[in-house]
Image 1 (cartoon, rainbow, N blue to C red):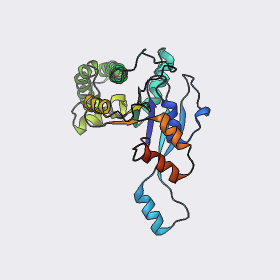
Image 2 (image 1 turned 30 degrees about the vertical axis):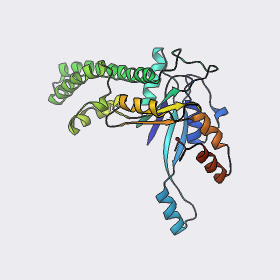
Image 3 (image 1 turned 90 degrees about the vertical axis):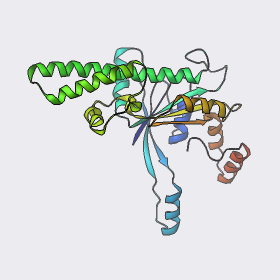
Image 4 (image 1 turned 60 degrees about the vertical axis):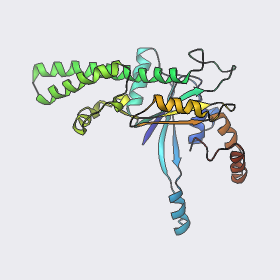
Length: 261
């Protein structure tokens, strides 16, 4: 499985990526053309039980391929590359800033998670709209040369999906039959992919249940998940080498397990 961390600049993507993959934070660059790849080990208590029972020489957990993506480029050519990279992903983790820090600028000038989520959803919807227009143009050209009923059905489906995207909604929320999903699967629409929205809270307002509840009400439907974490705090916890001390520290903060898990 492939997942990409996406989001505006200065939201904590690099900190979360480092926590998930173990890649050192200082090895990550901020150049808009950089895509950093890492592997995320998916721990599973069931695997631990089996390992304790059979005592193999090595215990291997499932892994997820994680890509740290730059912010959405504005220029055409870098944007094309950004789109190409994201189309290969199976799912996205949208990191949203929910922490106050006057020393860290915000791309939109203020902290507003709901607004930033809408901005990203709209960005992905616009990208999918451009894919639909390109595909409809190609179908029209092909139909002139060699009419095909399958292409007629595909074009009708795409025309039906356009208004949905134009309203800023995601295709994963649009009801479709399995045959219809199969018909457009090769186009790799971004808004059809599953999305985890990770609210990166500050130490002072974590876990911020009021905000979490509000965002969960904003983002509904299949393929959507919302969670809250404090990447800065978890980075500090990760530096504690002793597992018992680490667990004690988390317990003192009232955290059952790190949000990055």
